[in-house]
Length: 312
Picture: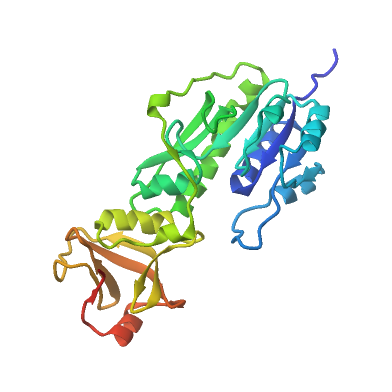
């Protein structure tokens, strides 16, 4: 009897999810014929693993086209006649001609529990919106983003003080688990599919560094969620203080603490810095920078004194 021919795939991948999901395919003996990834941007903090380096380690051809939908790229992939096409945190939409190239389906790994949080930066949005759970979803790709039938899903908790980076690490493991669990069924053409309910869908766009501006008219929980959602390695939450930028990187709600006064403001007591918020609740600020320099309670007191600073 002739040995079974391994299933083949072309993989579009980037970021840590791309690294881990490509690793799952390789561990599952999938014949990855080509990897398509991005060149790292000099304007971005690269805190994640390299898909290109992993492909090179395994001797897999790797390309970084500016436009993956270029007809020459589509023709090259079509000539490979892959069984599957996978997209793991690849940052560009794949058009219909590309999605039509695999013989057995095109699948995307998305960093939320679809149909919730379709679109860009789903982990950051889930934290910003105060969710207590998110996850990873493997789904069929359509020309409409994140709308195809679900074939695997893995949930993870979001703890009250988790930052987006900490949640992203959990989602990376969730993506690996979801793909690893369903891969044998995909290869056997018997993976279950669940059509998404469009009435349950939500869609969010990309975020910019300027979106980290804190509105101190909001309540403590909302401000805390913003700080968590954009904490490093993302650009961070910030506000203006005495004409210079105050960056807030970590915070904690203080439910047992009363504000000094009803108005929003900052002050230091002992070894801690606090923010009284507009809803009468208090945040402890655990990691700050002022004018580009780390700011602790002693430096705060030395620079601003013991009085509460207004944040209107």
